[in-house]
Figure 1 (tube, helix red, strand yellow):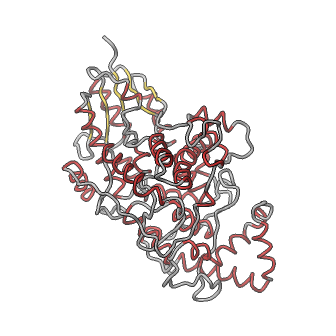
Figure 2 (figure 1 turned 120 degrees about the vertical axis):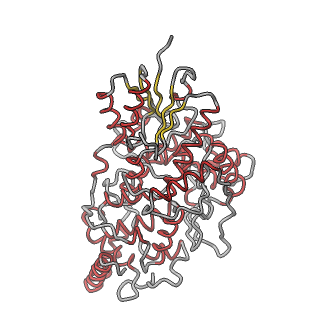
Figure 3 (figure 1 turned 135 degrees about the vertical axis):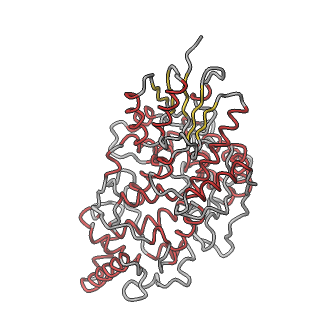
Length: 514
């Protein structure tokens, strides 16, 4: 008779293709899943994120049971729940006496360290398996990175396209003769731009039970719990993917960077939460997008731009995270130490652009990538907000946020805290960018055309103050000479006025009057 194995599935590993499931013996092995407060509260998670994961976990467990697996599912309010993953693994080992424990590598360094420590406490071996949902293993990323001076995503992306045969011609050239169509995906919003209809799913008894649980147990949690539109099963997630590919992807490319009042989604996919939780596989999403292009149902700039986010950026970010942890979280190259403004949580600010992006975040546990980078991220960069505080906020408020994907995006792309490891220059912009790429400035208390005075858009003076503070670092950047040439032409009087205005904005920010 073979050995019995306790097979642990985490809340963001809801895939039936992982070895922890495919290798299970239905007669001898037990699948362990647990809802625990330690994971639900280590940051102030959005209540929609908690509800999405708990409901998806419960539906996944039921699907496993129907398939004949033995499942030990610990609900949050079970009386014996230790409220930690370590505690539930130890309790299951004590009660079930398995010969060994098996778990897929977690997506966060803190959990990986915790499971390594747990090995010493368990009376049986603990095996940590690779997460094969990803398309680039740790070893493959390390081989690609090698001794490179810079780890630019574009070159990694091209390698991934070749390796997986996505958007490639038979002669080895990229479709359309170019690798990247990003330049065609930056059109400002047109008057006709509106979000297409989205699908929603009827909430069954399991989901209603979870919504009630979250309402009771997290009464002070961040965000708006309902309406709740998330897919919570693989079947539902695949329906949402099909809807996106058919009805939304064709218009995704042109206005990928646009922002509009009252439109949190526009033509973005909303699939990242499902991919990151395991309900969808990254390769199947890429292949479906490519198929739409080859059928003539989606233009190349739309299919390529969307595939680049998954096959390129998502895999690249994960590689960077594991290569440079654990010290990556402590990086603060720009010496930023200002406190996170309370309006990031409350949404109460006179800046219409931030107010709108923060409302999207609060209501939907979602804000598309340009709003994350060029509004909430850009402001935090310019104002010198402490990277650790910004990182913890992003990790908490978005349904698709896990540390492996959130931390490099926040610290590297948004805040330049890694000193340029990810981005060759900081993603800093003044109010003019926001005016060009959105309609948020219409009716705002501040004027993006004004830099000094009561009506001055805070992004303007903060932008120039940021550039002046970091001149020694960025003046040597080959992509930024025009910035300092413009600054020098202003003259001392205007420079002083801008920097004093920036200090007034900072004071207003810290006292809740911005």
